[in-house]
Amino acid sequence: MMEPGYKKRILFVDDEPRILQGLRRMLYAKRGEWEFDFAEDGPSALALLEAGGYDVVVSDMRMPGMTGAQLLSEVKKRHPRVTRIILSGQSDLQWVMQSVGVAHQFLAKPCEFEVLEVVLSRTFALSALLEDPTLKQVIGLTSSLPSLPSLYLEIRREMESEDCSLERVGRIVSRDMAMTAKVLQLVNSAFFGLPQKIANPAQAVLFLGLKTLETLILSLHIFSGFRQGERFGSFVADLWEHSLLTSELAKAIAWEETRDRALADEAAMAGLLHDCGKLVLADNFPDRYAQVLTRSAAERLPVWQVEEEIFGTSHGLVGAYLLGLWGLPHAIIETLAFSHHPQASPLKTFSVLTAVHGADSLISSRDPEEKPGSGWEMKTDYLESLGLLSSLSAWRELVFRNKGGNGRPID
Image (cartoon, rainbow, N blue to C red; front, side):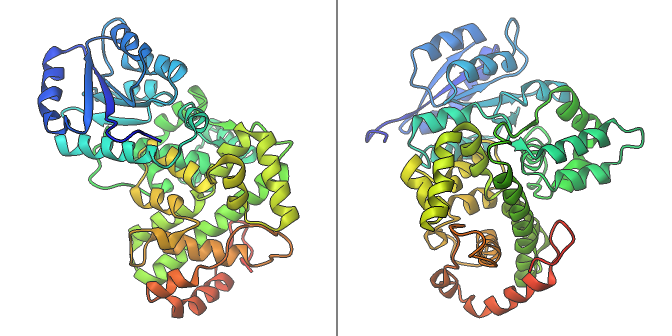
């Protein structure tokens, strides 16, 4: 826990003194809450970092001697718990692609004070989600989630084919947590300057184009398979199927309740990504996560409850922390953070969280004897507080009407 009065520390790196002076003036009003240091090159920044105590590094991209990408690569290796942000005026996509594996977020120059303040404030708020420094270090080193091997091979074959189709690529990406999270991270970065966040991976694929995707998939090798595949084979297969079904049902529930296409798209993405924290924990702590699954099944306890006892946190908070660092839409982060305790959410109206909670609960309760300990029971008190308890029967009908990712009815 942070001591009372602790100020968050930010290190800004830019080879132009006037830019650093401008940042100093811009952030003067925050001096009571944050502390700032400034460096004009990568080596100077690394020297300051060696003394420790920084929470965030914000670096320019194109600097002489050591580029921003090279600097953040070193920060990632030496200080993985430090959040890494690129703030650059470079409009060439190749510069962004150089840093896609080392930067958590990308901001564009000139950057308005309000934008920088929001990004930094949300970054600091995220740190409260996790207290374990080991977990923060592991997540800080995570550049991408592991992909389902079959989908990774499928997209490689599509990208390498002579008649590669963006539409087919978009469909594949939409079925994979890792690819979805990464394309959303990139397309929603300030580099592209979109007026609103994109939550539809197929739309994101169309926006990025084949050249960018080829670089991500074939050149940078940003996606990789699940390292513990043999040990957790059935767990991973079930997780992907469950996530796809939750995604589709959450989208249907959101559409049924609101007829808001943007909200429905966000619900679909939050449903697909809601269990991504399980992948992070299982891939990096296989022995401890095997204990979680074994105990959950044997004692018929919710997975998240056993996670909290063994890790001190749950996969929902782990996923929220990671995707929050990557700058994904706030509705998705909130859904993961409150996934097991939706009544604690400050939102008191129907939201993406409501749609995912409803979908996850209904799908997980289809066959409790087959998959004990799935961890989901419908929080009827939460639905009642929103005036939505009467909607449950309609949502159950959607379970029967919707189709799963494999083309069969969800029921």
